[in-house]
Every structure is written in structure tokens, then in C-alpha cells.
Length: 133
Image (cartoon, rainbow, N blue to C red; front, top):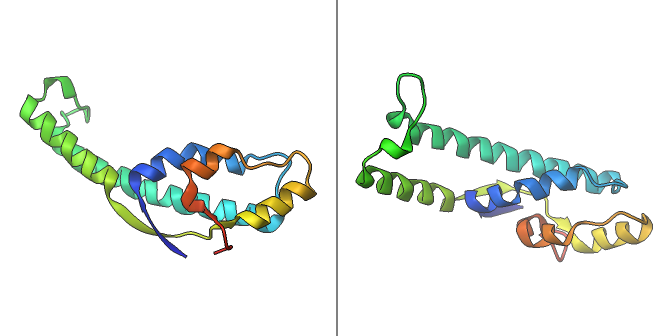
């Protein structure tokens, strides 16, 4: 299902999604596959974000490829900050397979100790679905 998600939300959710990949005990194979697929798609989208950010910053790099933001003029720094904020807020479409909350609840009942962290439901809410899709 195509979801519109900002790069900012993806960046905020990245660590939580990585944590989902490390859950122990592991979820069912189906749920594990969905988590892994969604993590791959989020990471792929964030690679695009990183590439766009590098293109934005290239004009400000010195010969060694480093940027000294402190030496930029205030006007330039303000414009660069605004562009970065615009990039963070840019929404992209991502073909996620939302994790059905009812399925998660069944797995949590069937596998003692398995639990999706509550923080994940808030930070990566786009990864979950009430109705399974």
C-alpha cells in the first residue's frame, strides 16, 4: 500500500524500525518478513534523502570535501537551513506493507516475551494498520 511519508518521519522512525528487526523472541515468519521488507524500503528512501542532501551541500564543500558551516555567511546559512527543512518535510510515496495490529496482538499472545515496543506505534505509525492493509 502506497504511503505518503516525509523524510523527517522516516529519519525519526529509522532507529525504531531497526529495533523491530532485532526483536526477541522473533515474530512469526510472515510478520518478520513484513518488518524486514518495510525496513529495506525505509532505508532505500533514506539513501535517496542522503543523496539529495549531498547534492545540496556540494557547492559549500572545500577542496577536501569538508564543510565549515561556521564560516558561511549568515544569509547563506539561513537559506541552506531553509532548504534542508524543505527536504526534511518533503513527502515521498513508499510502498509499505503495514503490519496489522490484530496480527501483532495474536503473535504477542502466542509467543510469550514477544512485544512490539509502544514507541514504535507512535514514531513509525505509518508501519501499522488497524485493518491489515
